[in-house]
Length: 342
Image (tube, rainbow, N blue to C red):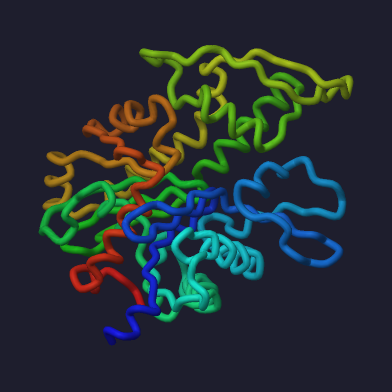
């Protein structure tokens, strides 16, 4: 096997609805939006990742921007495969290789995924030269990335709020005891902001603008200790059709997101209610861990803490917690072999 190892490269992929991250040699080498731009006439992919993201909402009729993943699973098989291919090719160390190396991959998947959806991920990976493909559930990868020893007989609760899904899981002894996957996450927050601006301010804004609003002044509660400054938002006035600007405070965004956050809270409570008593005792002592980009929403940790009466901790660099865990699993395949699905 030693000789062939020279031709094999190991990569860990967090194939997310909003962002795709790839780890190679313990470093995050790709961090790119999960979006592609396709020429409608030729069917060719003309841009991937950051380049395609800049085109979003600004394309003419011959170019279409596609997000190949929806709710954490592959929605457009061809586009996802091409996106993975391009992103893997852009890894600096692999660019130097004359022959494309065969790849040993660990890819993370949502916990509520079906066998068919799992097969789609595996097929996509095999088509981009994946010789050995392992799959790992997102909450598991997040727990490893946060630094929890998941093999211990001790219960830990992870809430991973991504772009398409929120994964809630109670983990012990290297397995998921009870989990819930809800399709309320970053994308839904963005749509809530678009809807709020339309109904309350007669202002039509695009996804990219709503995303910026979410990042700059997004909040889960209307009483923040360190509130962000008001933000001016430009869009199209629905009554006059003219471009218009509106000044928005974080309190309005908290109001816009309230219903969606309530549903995440309910899902957390439901998972806690299904937790065996011994593990519930552990969670009482260890608290709840938040990961994923959605956990960076201001005041969300405080809100979940008030609802559950438990301490809530946000992972450091929550956006990369899942890919970090996937990378650790890749380096320790023997240790985590019971967790990985082949």
